[in-house]
Length: 259
Image (cartoon, rainbow, N blue to C red; front, top):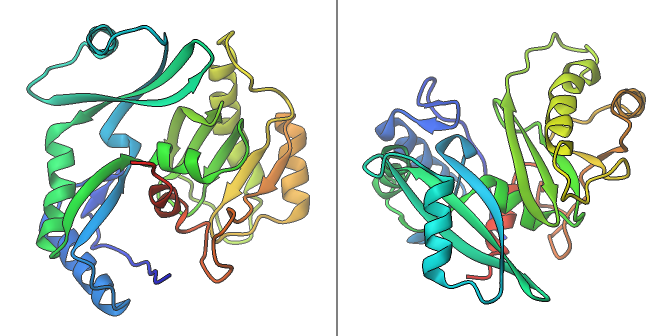
């Protein structure tokens, strides 16, 4: 498996949104050349800042037209600016689970155009939260992606992304990261626990992903603050040990797509 990572020009991506298409395309061309990747097609994981999502459950007898109608009601948005789609992702007993997304058309177009200008044809675009959920073994957990800037928090329940939150973190070198993470994590968990139809409990772990290693004592302190286990995210099955899974977690989730 060949992989690589690199930065983009300052100001070319702001809050997960591509604002300088040419700058991002140039950085991507350089990355592909440096890593000697010559594929002509690519799957893309994009920031949740470009979209809104819902996890909806229906009876197995529900028609596609009825699902279309429900999704339209969930996203009462400007059809000129936003595009909606849904995917049947899980089936259990007499129920099926649908993952519905509303995309910002112009922001998504910026992403795909940057990839095309880099000489690659984008064949699939997926939301980062869904990619993360596929790559994680735990059915219910919170994933904190420290490799992202700003930092991403994904709450996953029933193997499905349920909540996404993003925040900036600027700490002096050597300062304990735990207290800075506790407030946004507590906010995400409390928001989701208002729902009644969840399997997310105190044993659901908070998984730290990224190159940055949080000291054991800091993890223990954060666990006490939140009343949840805090652990490093383990490498997914069948992923080579030399792959930095914390950095490429969204890409690994893309590779796990069924369609």
